[in-house]
Amino acid sequence: MTQQRRAPRIVLAKVGLDGHDRGVKVVARGLRDAGCHVIYAGLWQQPEAVVQTVGDEDADWLGISILSGAHMTLLPRIMDLLKRAGLDHVRVLVGGIIPDEDIPKLEVLGVARVFGPGTSIPEIAEFVGATGDATDE
Amino acid sequence: MSDKGDIRELLRRYRHGERPALNRLVSFVSRGDGIDLIRDELQDGSHESPLIAITGNSGVGKSTLLGRLIEHVRSLDETIAILACDPESALTGGALLGDRVRMSSHAGDEGVWIRSLASASGQQAVVDHLDLIAQLLTQFGFDHVILETVGAGQGDVAVESIADLVVLLIQPEIGDELQWEKAGVLEVADVVVVHKGDLPGAERTEAQARDLLNLPGCEQTPVVRVSSKTGEGIAELWSLLVNRPQRDLTTGRNTRRLLRLVQQRIATWFAFHPDEVESIVQGCSSSGMTNEQTITRILSHLTNDHS
Image 1 (tube, rainbow over the protein chains, first blue to last red):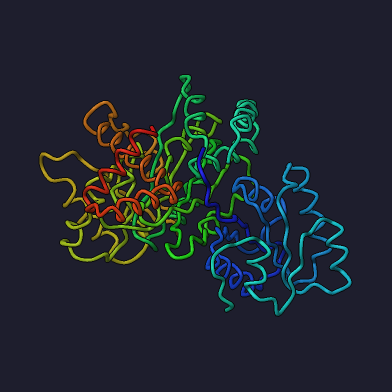
Image 2: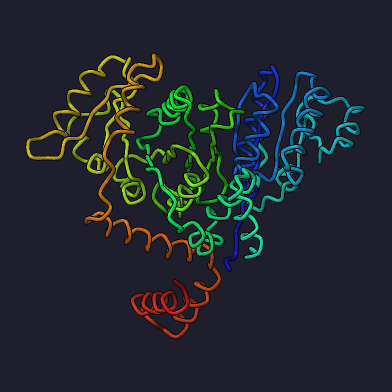
């Protein structure tokens, strides 16, 4: 009935006690400029709260930024909660400091992609299917 | 393309109280999809709680105040849904929706529902079909629905046609009394909140607001001083909001509301059919029509094919 011009909706959050939010804020702004609807959920979120946010916001993507080293504790929990909430269709991105040997483990959990240091914004924008012109800041 | 069958199935699950179905339906409506079907379905007579809109300049503390109101409503054991509008970039169509951060103390609480909505540029500070979204939320069982508009400020009066109750936030030291006279939103405010009430000058601003709004012979507009920092005035404001008589939608205001809805429908149609509009414009311009003739052509196209 109607044609949609639909911007990807992405929730960006930091979980646990990690307070380093420069990276996630740069990504938030970059993805906005690339034409995404970015919902920034902020610091110190609990996995339960993040999953409810993803549901209520009807997001297509969830981006989790972790620089604390707690990814192998927090991500299994988030992936499990997403499944239980019937949100399997939401694709999960992880950014931050993730050791190479953990990347395959996260992918086995269902994480779509891990973006480490040095990733450019256009790379992420392209991955989430944003159509705008991404600028690398 | 949305499938009518999909929407029917979602509506069925929504009727059974499934939150994911509610979430998906709100997305459909906010994209202008499946509107007629959903509107028809909701029409069978269930109650509607008033839609409260919070408006005011950016930085005046709308999200922060909402965070406080959420706490208060939850302490009364009632549920609340928030529609937080932020502007969408006219250049890229992107948006950064950050209002949740200031309301996050209740993240993970099922009695609180928050949706961030990007309002397309060129529209006023609200998103299309908000009335229908609000109806979805109240019929789902949320006790209160509050709309936060983009920080637009002066002259942003579109909220009036959608909300049952408009709360305008101002802060101390907003400018001299002439500024007040200019602000079109003052006219549509049902309640005026002097926010950041703990700051110096708040009492004077409150007194000025009272002077200006409550002239003899005018309808009395309540003015409340609130501080989200100290919590002062939050309970008072809330009881004012829930006890305030709603606008009488059967009188003249209803005509304005309906006209506004018609305007919205037309704007939505344009937004979702750029190619069709473009081809009409192209056709008109190549046959040397004037702007006026082109506009007439577009309007007749709209009224012939669409409701």
